[in-house]
Length: 178
Image (tube, rainbow, N blue to C red):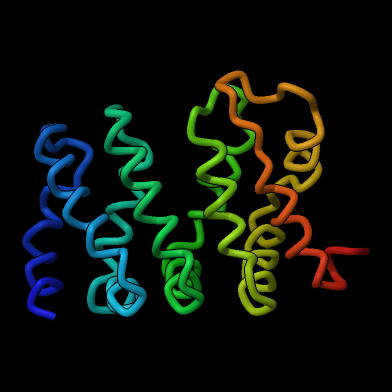
């Protein structure tokens, strides 16, 4: 728990305006913490969720390595159901960010975003929460489906294969099947 307390000090380095080398050190440190499921749940608790919000904000960073590591952090965090639920409840616009990346043919991070979206739909509870966020935000599921089925849609060699799992997970919901 001592390690998590020091994260409050790291948060100041998780800003878009921070020097890239400093951000890189900070996100590497956080990535190492996400290997443990219990730590993931603690990171997404109310006490530390601000750090996760900062990581999500770094998905807009101009330094690609920071974006890639931030996506890895989110992938690890979203693999835990409690963490995924906490992220979706505290920062629902993550679904918009994922959709924007997946449906952008020029996004080199589309596959990682598909994996995170898959984690956000991995249980019935999470699938319901994610589907409701998609509906509430008027996100275009047809565009997501078109992105998946169109050959060579993504120009950065992302194959979007994890969308098949996302659609399968959402198919648990009668609202989605209609």
